Image (spheres, rainbow, N blue to C red):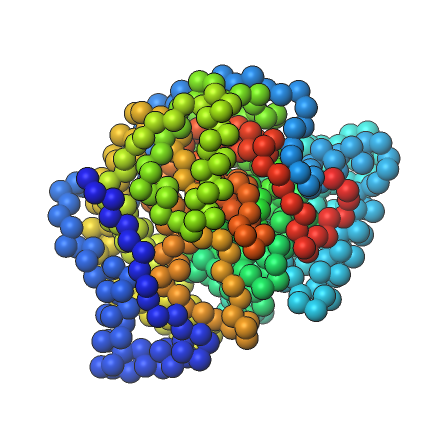
Length: 553
């Protein structure tokens, strides 16, 4: 079957153009014509033209057989190449030796955060932060360390959470101003609660693209998080803040959410590791109800080992989320492999090479290094990627509109201008289109499973491009063509439920980070994390321009 994804050149709208278009879409006749044109430009109008006979799959529950995971010899050293960001182990070494206490680190963190916000271009990594709460957590951790009884692998380590994830004492804004004045969350989400039980000092709610309905990381209300490698560029979205604060070294790990690449894209653009696990692997309990069938929580971290530690803490059955039940036991490795002998990597070359030249070159070079260290490369095919793109787009935007429906109906004008435009398109999707998309999901899961009959992991770039530039005014931009390029490799696994990870592969000519993606069989996170750990040892990391780590690496 022919590779069917195409690059599309569409007009780019700046802040003024978006305002005009929003005004026009609100008119009875012209609005309908405009929205229908936007839908055709996005490919949505053709979804139901594809004949599909399969029954619908409304949730991407995957086959229950545990995948084969090759045994790989682990290195006995850290092995990271290039600039060394501080890891969880570095924090613990500082606490164990008495060089620093968690309270001192919390003070340093707050000072570095203030520094990041008082710069000429504010970093805008966080939406909200409670100083007294942070210091109280750090004080309790200091007492545990001084008593010789730290409670878990993250004790005293500052950790952030995206602001669509409940954290006790904070209002969950989802990146909007709609919830100003609402009561703060009374309880932690399961993911936050498990990190807190492992000793983490939860330092606040990280910024995000408004309601997660965008891939740049732009936020009209709170200011857009800036890329640590260049202020003039976005972080990627929608987990913009987690990518930003991890990439800038403020925290070694953050909890993100991924509905269509929203962990992996910021990880790629900010030069960090981001894991979207198997569907249901990490509980969604306490996360905002935005996109039920394509939603995943997961960690972003500065190295594969910390990503693995966070995944191990957060993953597992939770009575609050029935989709977490019945998974195999969590299994991770702590160290990078010496070689990749025994691992078979699949590549669909037309898809892999459909990206910016710098992106393709960096990703091919890292893939070559994997093969030089023993991995076997085979060619695979994944048909109907255009169907997957459109079916995912209909699914996620329909579910987001439904999740926000009370506010869409009564307070539509309170959304940012870009969000209004996206919601105007999303509201026109029909029930027939949504169900047709779920029938496509059944077919696409089968396509991916057939590819996995030949390999252990499928390798692609994490994105078709590097980070997008911030508009000179800092305002909203609508660039449908670029959004398609950005998401080209990300949306498939949200739709099928397979795990996927983005990890650093190098930098483009402007010094912006590039990510490589590995897609795995259900519950093969251990293998994906080992591939990322291998990359840690061969990809020379660079220090970001905006760097605020509270301790040395």
